[in-house]
Length: 468
Image (cartoon, rainbow, N blue to C red):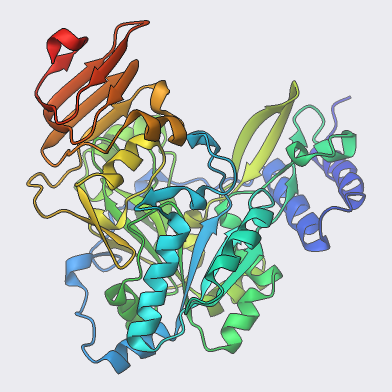
């Protein structure tokens, strides 16, 4: 006889009750998430009711009022703000151990160094006290605690808290993997960044911030170098009493992922997976060619109200995995999907410069090159580049790990006039190399290809030393 959903839930409840590694809040949150998933309460969107968002709800960045001039007005704005970076990810995809935020980005500075420098500069300049919150996962917590000690003397209050730790579900019978003897870290998972809202409340951080008069939190991924505090956005939200703001930016050819915003029954919805038969309709509408940067501005009182009412029922993203041959399921939620539950929620269509994520060593090549400059902890585009779009860069598996990437470049080439670059095979770059136009450098199998110091390569395909 097949077990019903309610049988599964009661079995799950008793199993979860015995998991001593997690708190009561985590146990309840997890059981609620699984119950919602099993009840199949998915949101069904009636496509005929979808509307293109107007400029009132997806506001063009250029239409925002200018920032107040006086530094005391700016200080008043900043005193209402908290910066929160999502710091739960590991650097494993780039071949690094520990939190991704401690990878060196430029001039020996890590993501976290740059974030602290930026906020410290604001606090020094305006006499404000903008705190930095880091939401860690159980994967990054211990390392992060040690790392933040080095900022003790900086003019930034740093607070860390952990997002929830949920047990992976065995797909076959919907029981938690840890209750079946998988006691290590592999038995658990952090349930996506949608968990930021309950975790802020459960950690006690939310109430502490409200008691200090903080009103808005600016949430962003720690690897997005473009996510800096923006006075115009903050000022707009305070003036218009918007409870939630998602920064969106126009899609380029390189952007595959990222949900878009639609107007639906008077609210904004983030649509991440568009049903196939509607994809062509979407693609033809200019307004939908925007995507979520995951830079989010959220009113703290609204977070408290909605979490306490258990009203944030975001779409559940099932993420199937395998652990030691056992098929498991991770149920996750995304912070962007919460937009529909907040009052006066808006999108702001921001310049592309506010979205500069470093997901792979090809991105690292961009930000370490002369295409960018570093000032006050902020990575800015070099105005000498004429093309508004970044070059496309494809590096072979030999460059995937940061350590391999760094050892294969004596110095980072000049790419200010580059359109596209493809590198594969055993390729090594000398110092002071310049690459322009469309370039492909592909070493023959089993052969080492060295690009000499000072080489200038423009619009070329290189397969061996004879092509240089």
